Amino acid sequence: MLALALTVVLAAGFAVAATAAPARAAAGDPKCGAGYVGLTFDDGPTPEYTSRLLSALRENGVRATLFNIGEKAEKNRELVVAEKEAGMWIANHSWSHPQLTKLPEEEIHSELERTKDLLEELTGTAPTLFRPPYGNTDATVKAVAEGLGMTEIIWDVDTRDWSGKSAEEIVEEAVTVQSGEVILMHDGYAATIEAIPAIVENLRSRELCAGMISPATGKAVEPDDDDPADS
Image 1 (cartoon, helix red, strand yellow):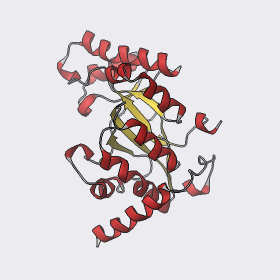
Image 2 (tube, rainbow, N blue to C red):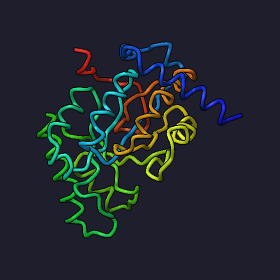
Image 3 (tube, helix red, strand yellow):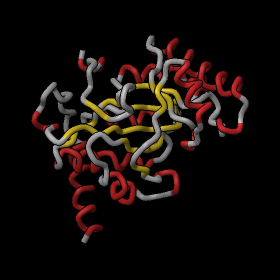
Image 4 (cartoon, helix red, strand yellow):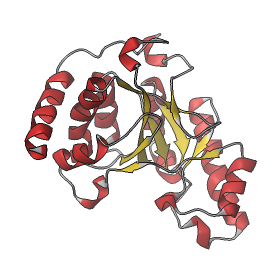
């Protein structure tokens, strides 16, 4: 029965993608009565998938937090600019995606600072959020991030899209998210992009909206900034 229900939701979600993007939820929007969740995508930007990911997010009227890898951002500068212009929040995912807990403190600092500086150069805004690769962290990693003005963000729901899951399976994982929680996905898989319409449809059916991640609490909250794509 669950598989059948998810198939229906997935089909409905694909129909949503074919329509014009609805306007960003206004402050106090009753459609968001149940709260906000954080859609996050790691490991971009990628020439193969980032543009498609941005199109899917915009077509479905949602914004997400994109945790970018510094060396990929350097090679694909125009995609970082496109992320910003699409109204996404851009965050730090280290320079080369290493196991940070295995590095000396000075190398951890370099990994985070180089990425921070590049993203600020490309977007005009220094990232305030950081996600350690693989979610592996310790007191040193967290302290280095804080020293650079960034809050460490892990996740509450792991879709495991990196493991070869189908779009339907990714949806099944994602729809367990609750208000204030953060979903982990990745910029790099066609199935993840295919799952977006159904994920958004499910959120709307539960009066949940995609929100920003608060640097103060690490929880998903109502956006407090203007969407550049709406101006």
